[in-house]
Image (cartoon, rainbow, N blue to C red; front, side):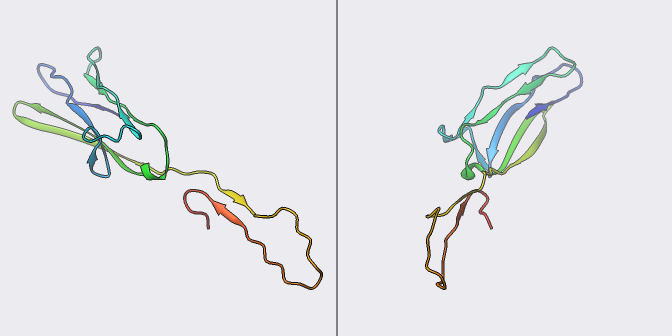
Length: 125
């Protein structure tokens, strides 16, 4: 997510960008096996200063599905200006179907019970 802030007069730098997952600050007690929050980059070349901070999800799996929030705030003349963006991530996978047998010889006039397994995310129906 890219978040920019604007001010009048002298141009202060953009505020710090923070990433949250389900309300939890990903910079604090970060699960480094799942996430990496990259250092913030500030570009002052344009009309407005722009700050960029990437969140990298290292391995998408169902446990990382949920609400992510990118927030920034900047203090200008003792007034706090803030903005945020919500990103809902839902990790899905292909549905895999399997049966324990491929070929089955059965006697005529008997009941046959065959089980089919389907797995995936979200749960197959």
